[in-house]
Image (cartoon, rainbow over the protein chains, first blue to last red):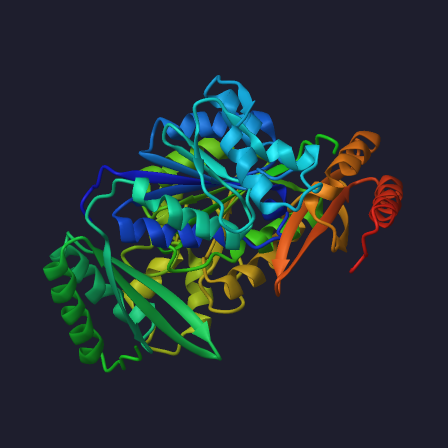
Amino acid sequence: MDKLSITACVIIIGNEILSGRTQDENLSFIGKRCDESGIHLTEARVIPDDETVIVATVNEVRNNHTYVFTTGGIGPTHDDISTAAIAKCFKVKIERNPAAVAALEKYYEAGKLNEARLKMANIPAGAILIDNPVSGAPGFQIENVFVLPGVPMIMQVMFDGLVDRLAGGLPILTDSIVTNLTEGTLAEGLSALQDKYPAVSIGSYPYFKQGKLGVNLVIRSTNKDALVNSGEDIAALVTSLQGRILG
Amino acid sequence: MDKLSITACVIIIGNEILSGRTQDENLSFIGKRCDESGIHLTEARVIPDDETVIVATVNEVRNNHTYVFTTGGIGPTHDDISTAAIAKCFKVKIERNPAAVAALEKYYEAGKLNEARLKMANIPAGAILIDNPVSGAPGFQIENVFVLPGVPMIMQVMFDGLVDRLAGGLPILTDSIVTNLTEGTLAEGLSALQDKYPAVSIGSYPYFKQGKLGVNLVIRSTNKDALVNSGEDIAALVTSLQGRILG
């Protein structure tokens, strides 16, 4: 695959992901959106709710990527420390953001917007808000870092609202062929096809489903012709090896 | 929570995870097993099938953690490059491992063990095999790095087989309280309880399920008394705020 210059890193912030108590769903969502937008998501980190670690990680990756997306840790409780950590990264103060207060006032009934909830209107100075149509409390963008909540349903809506801000490259096109053949049978032929099509990334992912073995062959490229031609060659390879194409 | 000295990092290797095409399930499994074994999983990385990146990442984290677990990229196809990359990390050669060949011979029917499949018996010199009772091809351990496959069903069985090799600390005990209260209502009281119980990590995770808002409060500690006492105080807090305890 072409080396593309527009890259992203996802930072998933949350002890609950590392303890296995919560299954992350945000990485796969952002990964798909990046593909569609021509942004190469080349890295993800999962880190604990620890200010020192958040600051070090964000500062490391924001210099190496076009975009950084963080999820988690921007709610009202004591363990929500992402906003403060991101402000430290950029050496800016946190200030109560009037537009964020207005968004919270719109969401909460009169009398319910207590001090803990108002903490969600504390935003690093100079940041641009990311609208939250689900539950009021905004995320924010500061330079190339986009700070989003961890709850997947809310994060997804907010991500879709900010995607227009992202400059992408050519969208990455994908196709896949599912077969009952196993990897060991396909390996030699696939390797030859990978050499034949350098503009295509051919991935081979074995599966065990309902007691049956097989492989999901995934091809990805920004070049449509190369994608189509390599797909046809892979299908021919499967057939020549007496395999069936299942999807 | 106590700073514990036994830590681990998970490295998930695979373009398919970063593209969002495959939902990772290995991190949450390993996270739970680490908790049970008293190992602090403090970091995870998701990286592409790229030798330079694998070598750099493994070399960085293996010096900072007691254990490193990698998943993915040890099958027979051209995109399975983890074994070669790990050998480079340790500056050792890859050699055909007789015990690994024997394991493959046991698994495959006569005549089916072709050269591509035999690639899975190429193991870095000096590594200790990790048994694969599901599909033959072993993983391996070299120093503190444990190299496992990506298919969750196989990885899980193999991980459970190696857990006896891991020296852990005190198991991390957990409990949780699910309530219909929201985070903004609980935040002030929770923060006070976190200050009262420094040996306990209190996490607050909002959820939206079937149109209902609530919070899952998770407490974690290696100290059983502190866990029980903080759990009772949290339950009392929920009740004092007119909340219901749902689980």
